[in-house]
Image (cartoon, rainbow, N blue to C red; front, side, top):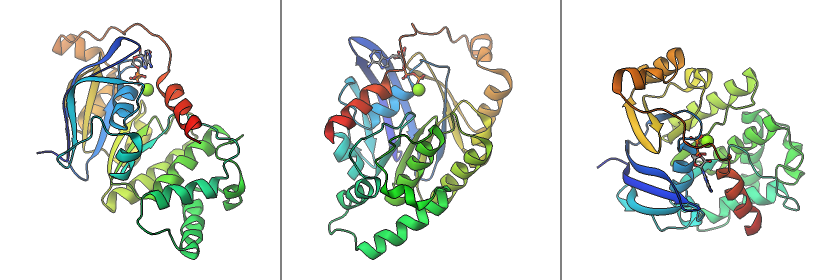
Amino acid sequence: MAYIEIRDLKAEADGLEILKGIDLDIEKGDVFGLLGPNGHGKSTLLTCIMGNPHYKITSGSIKIAGVEIVGKTPDEISKLGVFYCFQNPPEVQGVVSMDFYKAAINAHREKPINLVDYYTQLEKAYKDVGLPSEMKERHLNEDFSGGEKKRNEILQMLLLHPAIAMMDEIDSGLDVDAIRSVGQNIVKLEKEGTTFIVVSHYARLFDEIHPNKSAVIINGKVALTGGPDLIQRVDNEGYGFLRDEYGIDISKMEEKRDVVEDVFAHEVGKAK
Ligand SMILES: Nc1ncnc2c1ncn2[C@@H]1O[C@H](COP(=O)(O)OP(=O)(O)O)[C@@H](O)[C@H]1O
Ligand SMILES: [Mg+2]
């Protein structure tokens, strides 16, 4: 059995079926590149793995190391070692960054972290992501630039050291140096054993992190799986070859709105 095993996963939001039977196997230590045109279900898949209550899983299963996670809460799934990097990290007013990170670390431990250890790790993490550590005093993501928010997501990933990290277009809106920095931190955790699922439209990030496996999501299903070659081909040719060679209908689903993250961010905001 694969480390992450997804079988016939169907999910809907607002009565609209978005995931229409996803099957995916991801092994421990994989860096898995998830591709697909806009609006075909990539973010929905990640948010369903994270247990977003706004998405109703109508059938199928998601197992991590043999444990069924469908029906578990985001909190429980996080404690199993799953981390989700937001595409658009929410601004949380009134919550000081360093307090939030400490609470997150402690939620994953039996005993609270020793404060000296915490500050040492925090300073190192700020250095690793290339942000000034004075930012720890600021409210979480409040008035951060787009790039700072993304680096801040990576900072949290470094502090939590997840078993599985899911990144949803972490590279969108980042400059070249920031993409390189994100890539280096992903590679660092990968070497320490973290399994990655990475959604991106750009070869630049994939060139940094060298995914060993990939899949293309079309219309809520896995249309094709492959390795680095598949990523290269999509980068060179776009998705047209799926239609021409495999007869897969790649026409866009009705474009509604990029609502996945808005909905989850709202939940996170409410929980504060
Ligand atoms: N909460 C929701 N309510 C209604 N439609 C949604 C919701 N979440 C996602 N969708 C729709 O589902 C489709 C897939 O969205 P998404 O998973 O964000 O695609 P991708 O990440 O591949 O670009 C889109 O058409 C989107 O508008
Ligand atoms: Mg998306």
